[in-house]
Amino acid sequence: MVDMALWLRVLVLVACLFPASVESMVRHYKFNVVMKNTTRLCSEKPIVTVNGRFPGPTLVAREDDTVLVKVVNHVKYNVSIHWYMVAASPFMDAPIAVDNVTATATLHYSGTLASTTTTLTVPPAQNATPVATSFTDALRSLNSIKYPARVPLEIDHSLFFTIGLGVNPCASCVNGSRVVADINNVTFVMPTIALLQAHFFNIKGVFTDDFPGNPPTPFNYTGTQPKNFQTVSGTKLYRLAYNSTVQLVLQDTGMLTPENHPIHLHGFNFFEVGRGMGNFNPKRDPKKFNLVDPVERNTIGVPAGGWTAIRFIADNPGVWFMHCHLEVHTTWGLKMAFVVDNGEGPNESVLPPPPDLPEC
Ligand SMILES: [Cu+2]
Image (cartoon, rainbow, N blue to C red; front, side):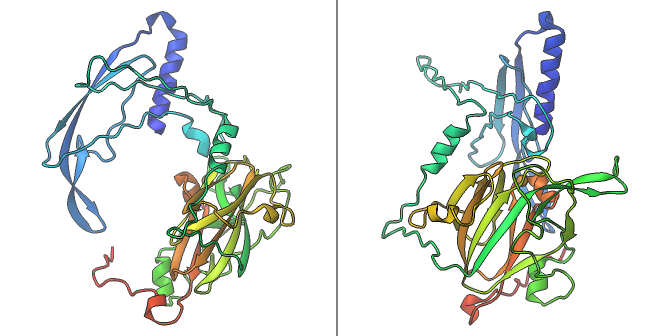
């Protein structure tokens, strides 16, 4: 994505400097679908690749170009190739000003009827937030007898997590600081021993279970930015008893920039019971929660400069990450984990690791 976007921007620049020399062209690509041996988790196995690469190669094109791709399947399986025709704002995940360019394309497949008409679509404007909001606001779970929505109504843990960016000192960095990300001002540090392993075998010193259930220093999350952007670093988890119920309000902050963070929770589905802009109001907003038929998800976009409230039952013992699914934010520390203790008996307890668990 990033490479492709850079290419597009370079080409647009060239187009501005030399308008007379720019013409649309036909770009030819050949995709050979071949098997290739790949090593994952200590074992080597053959996988299906395009030109020996997985993910496949990036196609580079400019507006009005025609791209011809010859796909030759050399493997013994039927293969369907999926085209991602997207090149919009790859820097949405970083506080950098860039030109927003939405790429569109018309796909023609060889072998279709010549009389087939082309269907043109009109995508909404890139900043058409009301269109997207009204669509997601209309979503409901079925809440039928066959598919009931078991929304927790009694809450054991009412949590409030701020999510956003920060800046920490960094001696080896170019200007002595680096951008980080955090939840409740904790920038998560990945341990060298797996969290689940440490939990199961009771290995001390890998993590602590003192992750704060509320922001350590409350501030106006979506108002004027505080002067101090610094976070604390740590491998902190939040401990839950088996079958306890959780309400979690995820509050975006305007630290550096407000952003829509797609937050993913492992181990559980949750219900999104409420959402809003600005700061969550603990008195007013819960009155508007949908506890009847909210959508059930495992990933939710927290609105930029807003909040979302989710509820789930901790009925899956183990250690479960919750993190931003913008991968760069995850690497910057926008993640935490819940440690869910065992209940009673083997059906409510973590299974031991399999005997063939790779050790590398
Ligand atoms: Cu994020």
